Image (cartoon, rainbow, N blue to C red; front, side, top):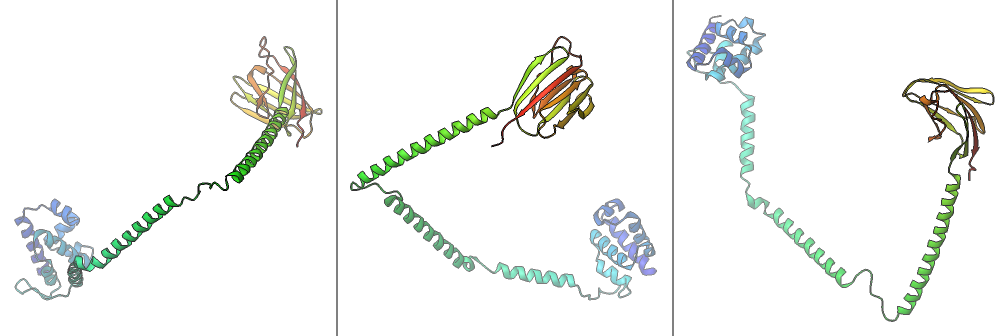
Length: 300
């Protein structure tokens, strides 16, 4: 216990001599202040264990300029304040010595050691430069596409004429095929027509529709009840809210559907993504009864 008090007092005096407060010491050593106070009072039993006692003594001593190894030796009973510091093996010092020796050996190397590598690099770059230069000169003197000779001019003209004729025929054929395809596509575009319109009833015809036909109802400013009937049976009954949407696919091959729209001004209707015009402006909130006829495009 006497050595502990002496160690703590020795460290405390060294700290005061350097005008270091306990708070500053805590920041430098990262040791909690209560442990620093315990060390100065010699109350080592308040520290977590012997390992931390030795570690904290060394850290404290290093900051205040005291030989921490000597204090640890005194704590372990291997020395006293009147004895010289006992010799202790330090693996860290050996490792540092080896590292220092290795560094010195590396420093002994000078630029002469790297001279062969530098010379090899310069030679390789010179060879690559010469090869690239010769390749460029060769390409300039012997182009890949040679100039036509006077002997083969007639044959080349004939070949070029034949090639041009073939190209024109091919372009003509492609143009004809494109025109035919465009005409076919134009013929197969879906057409939506309103064939009959009153305030309450409307008849809409859809031609060249792609099967299956999907009807989509989109809610607008108010609620709208939607009913879709095919072959006397409802395939959709739904009340749309504003911003809501509902879709139904007609049965395959269905050519007619009867549709009831409660407040017709509050809904938009689409067939396969295309808008169906059915609204009549005089009484927009009137119920609308729609007869929808459908003919389908021929699949080719």
